[in-house]
Length: 232
Image (cartoon, rainbow, N blue to C red; front, side, top):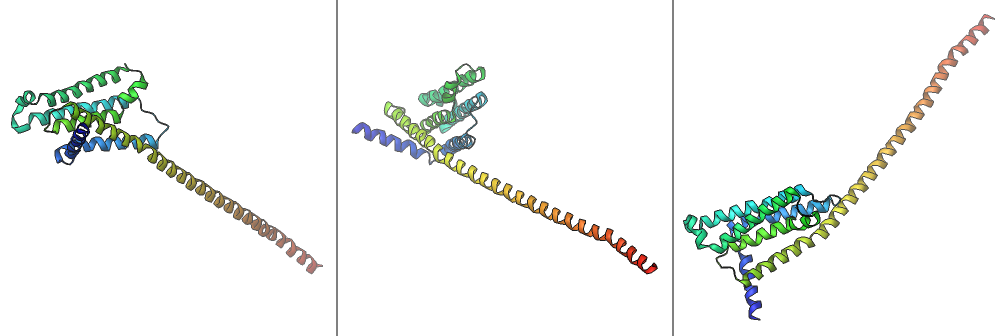
């Protein structure tokens, strides 16, 4: 019971950090990027991530780690001394920097089987790892196993949320696509109707032209007959 309370208290603490402006500037791009990538692949579900997307996603860890190292460096304006003072935070930032380089190497050289790279370098995996480390580095607490467990629970819940939005997004995009197809079918029918109307009008015009032509041809003949009768 006490452990559960401590875990819950740590979860509340880490999530409260997301309301701080400096943390928000770090995590908001990660969340937005994750949602946008999910939306893209749900809209174009016939497309699959490829090595170039795995490679570019891995680079995110480099940017996040450098931003975190900069944050540690500027704590209390102590500079490089902070890397010694805040060893756990510095180590966490260096670890995701190292992980970023490893994944970049693996994805650049295609060293992993693609079925593994699909999960290891997916935006949800990469962005949530970065998300957890950002919360820890910006926290004033040292990392304990309870704190670590709390962060695992947070990223697990976020992973569940991100994966759960795939279904409604897919349904929305399928609905939109069907509506577009209906509009296209309706448009094709309207165009076909217009073409049929034009054909009908052209046929009527042809018939009227034939009738007028026949009158024009018969008129001189009738005049000629009258003249002959008068001569006689």
